[in-house]
Amino acid sequence: MEELDLGHRPKEDQIHKESNSNMPKNSYENLSKKNKLIFLAGLFDGEGSFGIWGKGKGRTTFECCIEMCDKDNLDRFSDFFGGKVMKVKIRKSHWKQSWRWRLRGPRAFDCIDLLIEYMCQRRQEKYYNVVKRDQISS
Image (tube, rainbow, N blue to C red):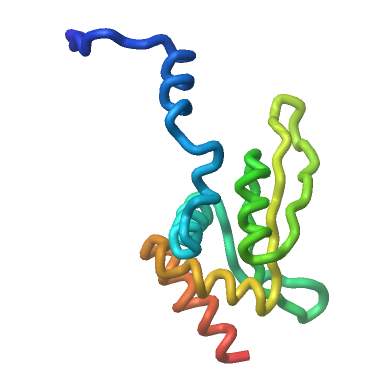
C-alpha cells in the first residue's frame, strides 16, 4: 500500500505544543450548563453504568457510576451532580490507578433523567424499559 505524502509532518511533541497553545487552560469551565451536561452524557454513555442492584436481604437501590483513570473528569460529575469520587484499589500491578464516581437512590435517578436524552438508543431503552418500569412498579 502506497503512503500518501501529506507534506510536512510535525513531530509528536510539536503537535501537542501547537494544539494546546491556542486552547484555553480548561475549556470545560467555559461551557454552558447545557453543554457541560452534553459532555458528561458522552463520557457516561461510553464509560458509565447504571442499574438496580441488591443491597442486602431483599433491598435494592438504583445506582449510577463510572470508573476511569481520569479523576478530573470524575470530579466534574461530582461537582455537577454530587456523589462521591473514590480511589479504587489497583487490581493488577501493571494497571494504572483508577477512580470511581458513584451516586445512589433518588439523586441517581435525577442524574440519569438529565443525561439520558443525550445518550445512545441502547442506553435509553435500558433506562425507560427496565429501570424506570421497575421504579414505577415498586
